[in-house]
Image (spheres, one colour):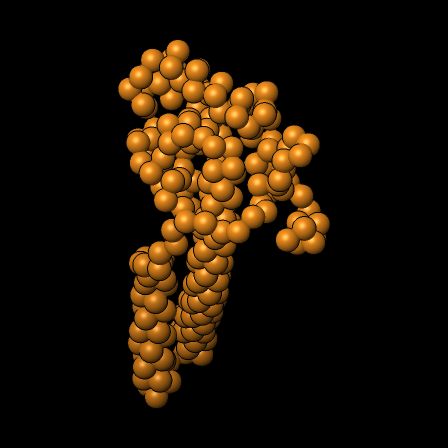
Length: 223
């Protein structure tokens, strides 16, 4: 909860984001590993080897059935024994059944690939929509943090320290990122807490996260 007498981080008129941008420039190296990387969906490449094998099997079964059919017709005209004709006929029927079975498998595989393509495209659109909403939310949060830092009267260095503290960096990590001593960072962090009226990193984070944790309906009523 923010200290009594202080305004919420989300009130007040919008302002330019120049201070926050300037404060963020020197610590880009340290937070690269902490950035959330959204998955990028790419169109699927149609390289289904099993489908090609099935098509080849259909062709082979078809050729076998055709050859047996021709031979069966010739044997029938030549008066070949009925047993032999039945045997060849059974083989031809088996070849036709095999071709039909493989054709069904190919058709099912094609439908599955088409459905997967549809699902992938839907997931890609959803991911793009989420990234857009997340960018808007983060932009609004950054502007709100910048406005609150202005109300507290933080210097440029103290603004950057406050941002790095909110990102979860330790004093030692901040000192390395800013090429300064850990003692200096501790003093600047204490200045942030003193000017904000907060007692430490936990209260600093809670101050800015309070509205983010409110239910959507309640948050909308406050806006």
